[in-house]
Every structure is written in structure tokens, then in C-alpha cells.
View 1 (tube, rainbow, N blue to C red):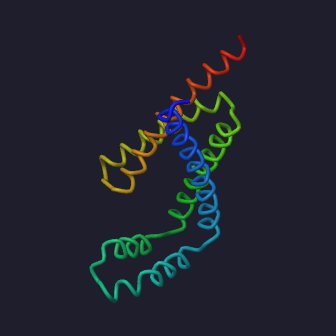
View 2 (cartoon, rainbow, N blue to C red):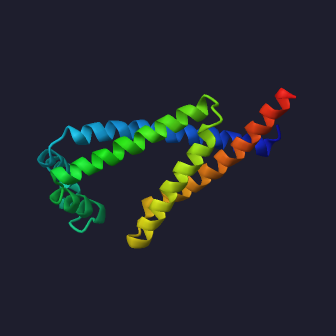
Length: 162
């Protein structure tokens, strides 16, 4: 394998493990969010941001977190946890399939991550966010790497069978 191919394969493997670990963290976050009362979340945010806001009352991130905490309700808790749980389960399922070398997992991952990319792109046009842009770019790179590995794996399996 040439160094360029090794580098791309290495990036693919890291990307898939990253997606799988991210999925596990989303599952944990979804469960924690589901089990935590809105007042507890708001109190945590206040405690987390209090020191920084004393030093810099105009801190954008802390003020944004406080604003989100003030508007956090049972409804947002439910939808937030449902999003995290479903998104996390899908990521873990697809990453596991790819890590185990299941050929069906490659196109399935490309389609589902492609759907996430479309959704995220729509969100970006409505409300721009640097973290969401970064996540979208990473997802695009991962889809391209999955596509490359899928075709590479299919060729390798075809050569073995002949």
C-alpha cells in the first residue's frame, strides 16, 4: 500500500472510531438529559458560568448558555434527549457495522450521514454556527472516506473470490 493510501485508510479508521465514540457519548448525554430535571440543568449552567461572568460579563458563550438554560423546559429536554439517543444509536450501529467489515454498512452510512449533512446545511442557512459548520465539513470528509473504502473493500473482495 502506498503512503497516500495508508494515510487515507488511517483517516478513515480514525473517522469511523470518532463517529462511534461520539455516538456513545450522545447516548450517555441523551440518558443523562432524560433523567435530569430542567431546574437542575439550569442550576448547573449557572454554577458553570458564574465565575467567568464575574470576570467578563459580556462573555458570549456563557451568556448563550445562560439564555439556553433559562428557556430549557420538559419539552426541550424530551426532544433534546430523543435527538441525542436516536443520533447516537445510529452512529454506534453504523460504526460497528463498518468496523466489523459489513459491506451493507458502507452505503447505509453514506446515505444516513448524507441526510445529516443536508439537515445541518439547512440549519446553517437559518442560523449560522461555526461548530455546526465544522461538524458538517467533518461529516463530508467522512462520507468521502467511507465511499473510498467501500469501493476499495468491494474490489478486494472481488479479487479474493476470483
